[in-house]
Image 1 (cartoon, helix red, strand yellow):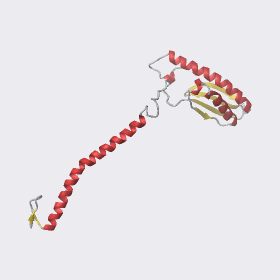
Image 2: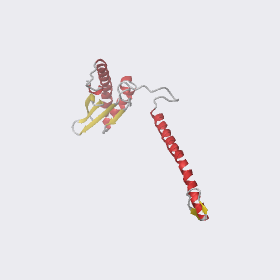
Image 3: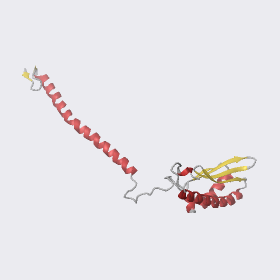
Image 4: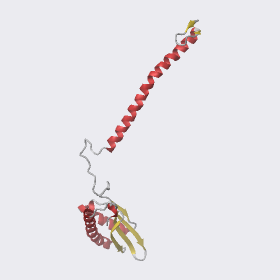
Length: 180
């Protein structure tokens, strides 16, 4: 029997090898703990860098994106909430004319429709919670094109008027969407 240098106990040679192996393995794993912690820290940093690169406003592909003054990050969108063929025709005609317009083209517009079997359809052109145009549309498709032309002019004037009021009036108690 030999004395184990690690435990100071007399053990048979077979057990001595097992104790030596577990002691050596324990020392290696103890030294591996900082490596594992460092690897986890490096992985966390890499994940944070990926997240930061996604949120970065500037990139090698182009200049920084300027935030819009209206506060909405998504602009120039028209949402179609129409149901009938006349409503869809109005939406197509309105969107074709409005997208060429710089005032309406930068606004987020929703076109809503409420069909009525007796009176035709009610149509609203809205931006957020503001209604800029409302009309009663008969099922005749040729009227939808004519009404869309009128709607573009009315909505453009209303948006300009609203933006002018917002630029002139500032109220700390109200948000920009609450000023009329």
